[in-house]
Length: 288
Ligand code: G1P
Image (cartoon, rainbow, N blue to C red):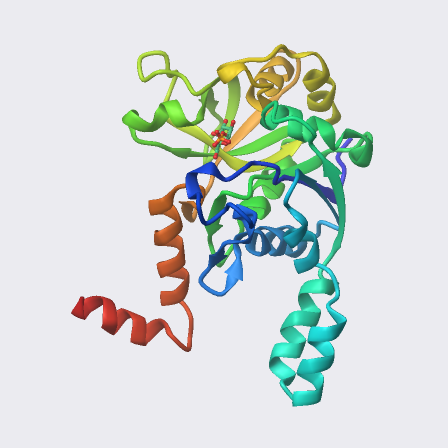
């Protein structure tokens, strides 16, 4: 039976060590990509795809995310009084966007464990998972929309992959898949962060998934894997032995905003796409 995907889990409990000291007193998910916090792009993608409830798996020091998506009476009052209509709309819109539930991941036991922490809020229907470090730019169809399209034809676990260079396979979950035509693969095996020699392909998982409750059950029993963490990849691998699992080669430009260079590329390119500053920034960059 096929379900409409209404819930999404977004793990945000990571310490953001790669961005220290910028992330010492603020969550990495709140670092701006041009003029919006990184997490807002992800939540907008979810909302635009019809997600109604978002479960954010957080940790200590992440209150700024909650405040960002909450109503801010003082700020709204001030903006209204000053007649800053456009800014007021922007700020109000962020708070109205969606219902967000917060669950704590009390120990840093890995991505699989983070998703497992959301199990009571998810219940027994398929759900989406978004990794906040993966930003996919595609004006025609967002990452999650592309997965939903495949899911409507192939109900089951569906997640995104991209081709990654050989020297980077050890940063990703890598799949062994059989092409079903177009961008879709039937997944036969998955390995979390293999060495170049062990990698079964160069198709690396990126942070958009549609998962079934079987994956949550598997997360409850899988042993810790790569780096001693509970890996989402291992739970999906367990499910793929019994049920169909599909990978979709996503179209669009993908940024790894958890990496300093990827973060800068995203910030600059999102600014270049902006109507107000884009042209001026391009001129400036040309003259650098
Ligand atoms: C996680 C997943 C990995 C996936 C990657 C995509 O790894 O475990 O399978 O390829 O996200 O960004 P992380 O980057 O959190 O170490």
